Amino acid sequence: MTYKNKVYIAFDGDSDMRYYTMLEAWSKNENNDFEFHNAHDLNTARDSSNEESIKKDLRIRFANSKLFILLIGKHTKNLTKFVKWEIETAIKLKLPIIAVNLNDSKRPDELEPSTLKNQLAIFIPYKRKVIKYAIDNWPASDHEYRKNNEINNYYYVDSIYKNLEID
Image (cartoon, rainbow, N blue to C red; front, side, top):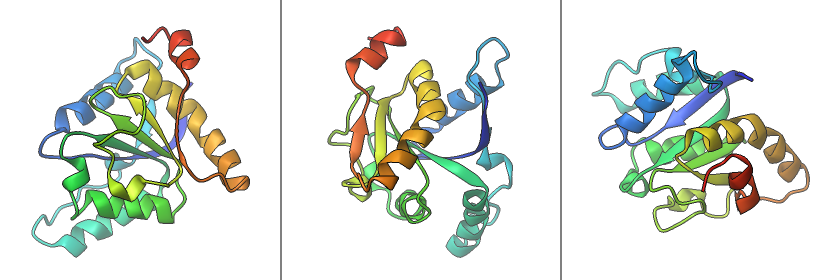
């Protein structure tokens, strides 16, 4: 099943580009069912010297997105210029947030950006099947949690990983 809406992906462009590139490769591979519509395809943040110019282009991506994925690497929590702003924007827009731990942790850990603490988000490891499962299922769960005012950090129970054949 293809997630039909745009997905906004935030990450450390200096350290974690390979993980983002792998997500794109999985999505373009016809031999698996991992597909999503990447909001980054809408435009290119052109003027790297002007912060407001970049944020203007990023706002266009946000305006067309229905899901936010954050790739959490070693340095993500220290990125305050754009990644922190992207997280804050996703929270303000009430986008479902999938926090993908690049260290394969299944739960929030010491690498979690403080901006996500006590916010509605699902934390998962960087595994193709788990990311696909979250893309397909987390938006509906997010909707239910919001409706019940259950704003918190969440993670999948081990039986989900067993069903996905992920240890």
